[in-house]
Image 1 (cartoon, rainbow, N blue to C red):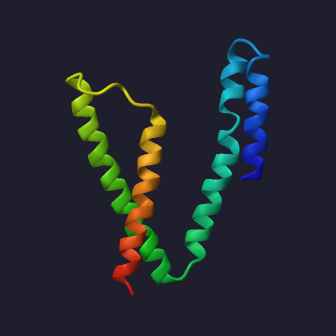
Image 2: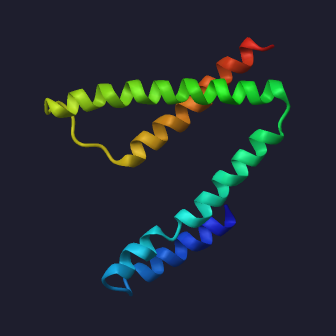
Length: 111
């Protein structure tokens, strides 16, 4: 995460100082440490015991389903002009909140 913070700050600093295709490259630089965080998360998941892994996988599945349901609902309302087009960050935030809430309920189930 420290690498992400450093690369993000560097990306923000450099973005205004480059032109053309380099702007896309600089804008996407923070994806590299995000990919490393993703790989660390997978390694962590594979090294946990079976119960903890099952709790995480069930929580992730519930969060994915809830996010998909909310995204489709929002999409229908967007198509009919009831709501504005959202940022992709809204979907990520929804997924993370759903994962947090699902984890709470799944952990309670296994107590």
